[in-house]
Length: 270
Ligand SMILES: C[S@@+](CC[C@H](N)C(=O)[O-])C[C@H]1O[C@@H](n2cnc3c(N)ncnc32)[C@H](O)[C@@H]1O
Image (cartoon, rainbow, N blue to C red; front, side, top):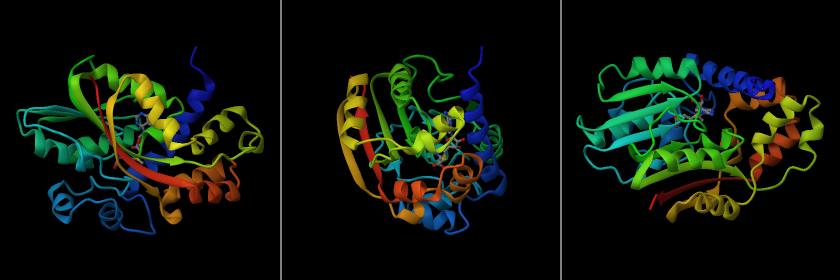
């Protein structure tokens, strides 16, 4: 029987990101181009992708360190409107294949309509902790600012490990709340909501990397880990969802925002 907590969480994620997909921009405070340039994307990269595929939703540039060869199959976890998929597609060339996975139907629809000129890019609806992808079929996995939205992050890395070919690599940019937020679950009455609100707590970066290694990844190289500017920590739509739909107090969100880091790393499946 479907778990009602999972159904509630799905509703919240699809509601928040569906609204962003329809609006066509994440933040009213900063343009998508300015946000992406802050995370290290060049103006040439931004100009090379279809209009409307960069929604300013990233928190790093995983493609900056990804090792992608011509002809490779690349899988992007939480592909949004397709920004990183189209950049990856330029590097795989037409003999390669790029698959974007997203759980929000409105994002998939937007990405598919953006990608009409890219026959070697496809978008599949699904969850990154249960990938609709064959085992050992992918050369490179990328992900930008998504894994922190999934409660069982270990399962996401297990799934990435399963679908990668031996010798394949994964590059991830994401955020972590590094300060514990005690009392958060008791601040929200509905247990399903408490579980969703728990998404804003993570733990130490060392513990996180240890978990990635436990799944089996080797040669983990951290490219970057630094505090995120507090005003960019939560997308305004997501923050509004946390506050208004989930009842997370503003003080907790502010504390989380001030203890958030952004990081990028690459690792290998031996
Ligand atoms: C912050 S956005 C990042 C989008 C994209 N990576 C980018 O940089 O533009 C997060 C995306 O992850 C998707 N998402 C959230 N949870 C997911 C899950 N469990 N499985 C697949 N996609 C998920 C959301 O629908 C949203 O499109």
